[in-house]
Image 1 (cartoon, helix red, strand yellow):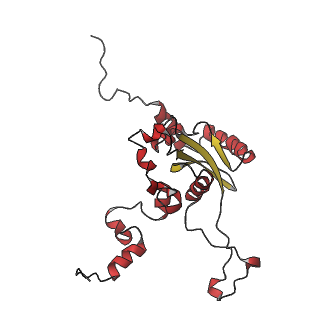
Image 2 (cartoon, rainbow, N blue to C red):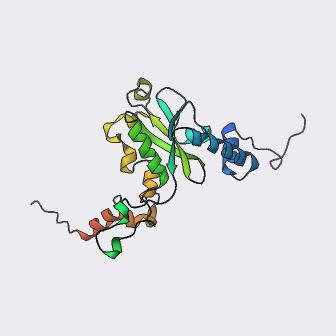
Image 3 (cartoon, rainbow, N blue to C red):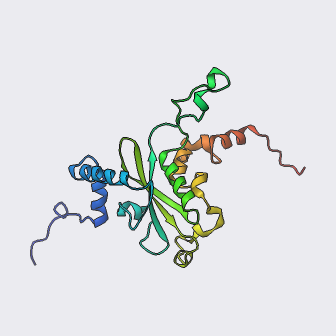
Length: 218
């Protein structure tokens, strides 16, 4: 019959995407540090928003909804790192000292949602599906954004993605409906941790608690 390995001796087989996932998980490894350094140099020479023929992180893109078929587009976007300096002429705020801060202010949303918004404005006929990090250096962060063409027949006939054809999903990246946008809104929480944001935001939760609703026809 031959030798039969016991349960402890059986080896689990990893697929191709699992190998890629483990590789990208160890960003301090020699191979990935070299790759990221070379690619960061290349990205600096290119335009801020560049259309790609294929995703850099195939495994990540497929986890976020990408399909290698017609109707899907991948675009890389560079966003400048750091806080958001207030746009006041010569840094002068004609008001109270409390409001005179210029430099140490932070933008409300994360840089990933900013990248999605930049790409969504440039490719306004497409819908932003999702995005992921690919690289960064001292001044820039680079994200790849997955876009979907809502007017393409391959998309309209696919029951798994044709929800995005609905007009309510126009510029969803500008309204905080993508994954990165929901994160900046604090909507990654569930259960009792989300009591403060019931209704979509802490303002909605506060309003709901502080308004008296009388169930009578008026």
